[in-house]
Image 1 (cartoon, rainbow, N blue to C red):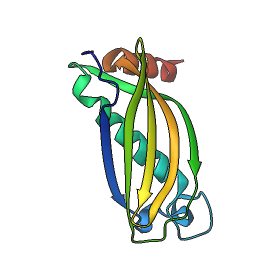
Image 2 (image 1 turned 180 degrees about the horizontal axis):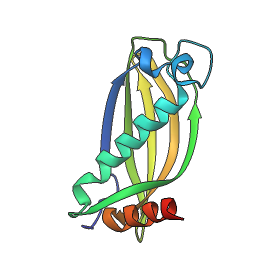
Image 3 (image 1 turned 90 degrees about the horizontal axis):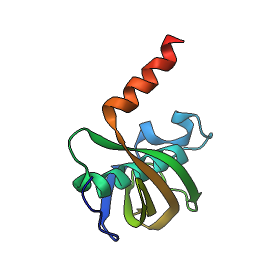
Image 4 (image 1 turned 135 degrees about the horizontal axis):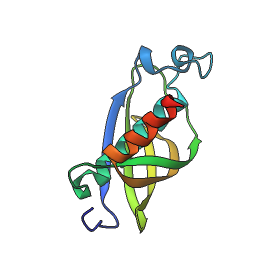
Length: 131
C-alpha cells in the first residue's frame, strides 16, 4: 500500500428509491431510506477514500462500524455519504463518515477497514466451505 494521507476523502451518492427503503429490505415497516442501505453507502464512500492508495491485488475489508442514523429520508431524495480518513495504524484505516440527504445530515459513523491481499483473503474464505 502507498502512504496514506490523513484527511483524504471519498464520496458516494444514491437515491432513496423503492429498492433502498426499510420496508423493502426488511429493516422496518416504513417507506424511508433503510439504515442498512445507509451503512452500505458509507462503506462505499470509505472504499473510494482509500482506493488511490491501494496497489494491484490489494483491497480493504470492513472490521468495525459504529453508526448513528439520526433522521429519516423519504423515498425519492438523493443521499450522499462523505468519508474522511482520520487515522492509520499499520494496515488498519479509521474513517469518520457523514451521510446527508437534500434536507441535511441523516447519520454519522466511525468505521475501520483493514488492508488485505484479495487473493489470500478469498482463499481463506473458500476453505471454510470445504470443511
